Length: 111
Length: 113
Image (cartoon, rainbow over all chains, first blue to last red; front, side, top):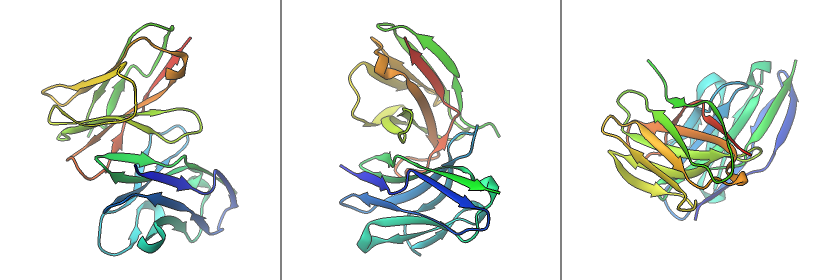
């Protein structure tokens, strides 16, 4: 069975700080990888996705993630966070016909 | 364009009762999935339907069932409710099966007393 591990449950950053959220997964085959985000009061939405090709993928709002196959990792990064990035971030993997989510990381950005 | 719509948004039931949750996918999306999210956890996969056929089932008891209709809308049924069924139930649609790209609704918040 596949699983997803997110290393940080709660991250607090000041505006303009750099962000990196860790995500590791376990799955025996080819995977599709995702980061989803839930802003306060809103529904879950797709931030970025990796299916194949360039392991560095770019998403909305300046976010990017790097797929490192040898490390089974798909870390999310942003060079300079804004207060509006305050949200909960979920890493997810698609395999065996289902999407498995991590437990989420709550990001709080302080103005 | 309308997103994924779910109803009801909130409901309260007592133990032993049954509940039906409804979901309308984005127009043109033929795949619908259901997830359960409890506080402090990520969404847990319950079912996936594509073209009215069940394509996947998560590790949930048989009290949980679902179906997809010819218009691609879907219902999730939970029988003999337990306190532990209290959660946010999320519906997500996808334009096709087999990618994992999900478009979520706002969810139905179920409280079991």
